[in-house]
Image (cartoon, rainbow, N blue to C red; front, side, top):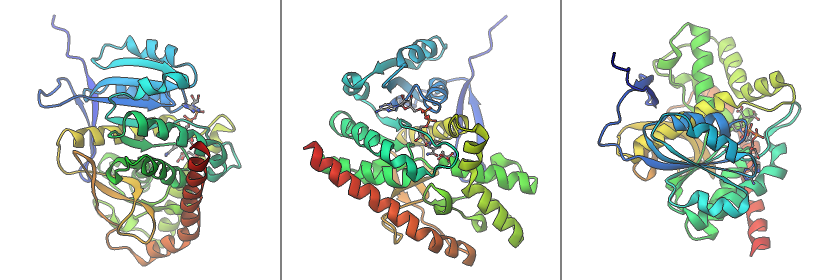
Length: 350
Ligand SMILES: NC(=O)C1=CN([C@@H]2O[C@H](COP(=O)(O)OP(=O)(O)OC[C@H]3O[C@@H](n4cnc5c(N)ncnc54)[C@H](O)[C@@H]3O)[C@@H](O)[C@H]2O)C=CC1
Ligand SMILES: O=C([O-])CC(=O)C(=O)O
């Protein structure tokens, strides 16, 4: 009896309809890419690396952490897919981990415990991201950097300032991963309205913390209408979904499995776009030209070089305009904090 073909998982992410696709063969036109995960031994890093190991879009998977990557690497290497896994541990192996990478995912750093805000992580995670991005500037300056480490509102500005200081900044290539907000919004809206969540797309704009997370419930595809009470409760749930997980995990961490899925979905969008697939749209937090904020998440059109263009925020309802007003002080303060930190960091490290 013939063995059934190996199933690979890949996700098509487009505005509508959105489907999860399983494919059995690698199309000859796909150029497989090299992907690194920095923080690969962590709660997000391990399941994210597993999902990447299953992808036909990847050639080499580079796992880097300050601990435990050897075991994670050997474990993953026994999976029967074509992705070649290499493990790197400790600062002295970081340069090697980054050589020839096309996409670098950064989930390195500490997660929240109950009672903490994402901004409370700044004190530890800002330096971790600055060090890792400095290494990227030196070793893979052309790679796309996808920042998962919180507080995203500040770590993306830090990454940008570091790349600028090394004269390798490319605004198309630094993206804060906010896909989890988009996934949660689709899930919660679909649950509330009895829809198929895989076919619901809710753009989520702004930043990635509390009030700065702004779901555009007036722009859902396909269109859905809500009472004021539904708008309030869905908006609040989407904004506080990270805290919902932190509290349920009761001191053992924050979202890891759903974030790994979100990170993989985002990676597959990027890799598809790098391969020349057109019309790939995903939300992400990037340096912003068309809003009043220096950084802002919007739906992004992805292409061969990373972010082709922001799709913008579209026509906002009065309710959403008020949400943006409310987000303004926190988002601007988070952004400035990241920029100020990077300046001090760069002064000290030169
Ligand atoms: N963007 C988003 O939507 C989300 C972001 N996060 C953030 O992701 C980050 C990681 O979360 P978890 O994986 O749950 O944490 P974790 O503590 O389970 O894993 C973090 C990993 O980073 C490693 N690490 C620490 N310093 C490092 C360095 N200098 N270089 C390389 N690796 C280093 C640790 O050894 C550990 O393996 C947190 O900041 C968390 O807030 C979490 C969920 C969603
Ligand atoms: O809430 C946290 O600290 C982790 C996170 O960013 C999320 O789950 O959205």
